[in-house]
Amino acid sequence: MIRRHILLVEDNPDDESLTQRALRRGDWGAEVIVARDGAAALATLEAMTELPDLVLLDLKLPKLDGAEVLRRIREMDRTRRLCVVVFTSSGEPRDIALCQGLGCNSYVIKPVAYESYISTVQQIGAYWLTMNETSLHRN
Image (cartoon, rainbow, N blue to C red):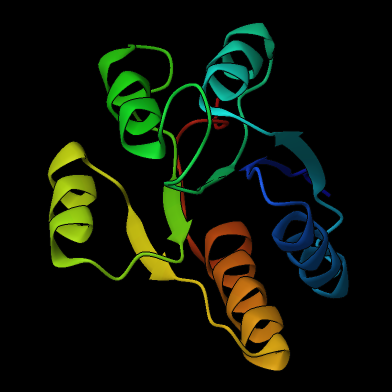
């Protein structure tokens, strides 16, 4: 079994807890690494010997916002092909257009209701960790 890694970039402790709970329910055996601001996310990626299979990226972050983190991920040779899902409360058309223009793989608006939130995270995990094929970890 391939060990999966997820980088969760989230500054809200409640959203972090809900997201981790939903990912555990998915039973993919994924290790979740948390960065609580944009600068920490980039430092974490730089320090990782094995890149994550998925980056779940909030937009509203301290230090560096999610759009800037995404821009930098796409600029670096090592990280430009990472699967990045922007998972945010913003449904603003300008935020969606900006992130799509910067190359996010998907843009998902966080549901407010508990069960919908859990279900959405599980669907994200199911797709990106089990259905999507990536060449990042293939030899």
